[in-house]
Image (cartoon, rainbow, N blue to C red; front, side, top):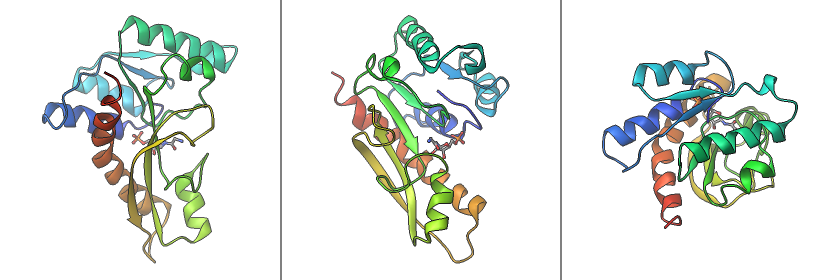
Length: 184
Ligand code: GAR
């Protein structure tokens, strides 16, 4: 599931193609027409579907449709790779322990929107990223893996985001492996 640029989605595809993990991406779902993730999927030959949240009456309706699509694609697990919508119990309860989120902060610090900006404003010396299982408490599910990223004196939002992204790309495949160990 992706809403934006899709660099984490592509990192996962690369990890699979480079045989760092044994997995198959059945489907990419995007909610923003033409977003970077969708363009990457076209280039990489990965099937994608658009579920535009603007076409649904409620979050629950969108999530119900997501569940249907994932069941139809027979997926074992789902990665929210920059999915910028709050998900509801409709989706979370359909895939317990199988829904994974990437968050750009060292949780439990800086939950919610703009984890990078929150860290910069708080003046922390160490920022980072977290991959965790999704539960009904926002950004508070069991942590699979984290990576720390030092905040440099010269950092702005863009430079810190870029270094956090690099770490996300590195730890996401590992997190997926760790999560999948619980699935059998
Ligand atoms: C990632 O940095 C991820 O941590 C963040 O969105 C970015 C997506 O980047 N997710 C959240 O903020 C979720 N609350 P990408 O589109 O390049 O993979």
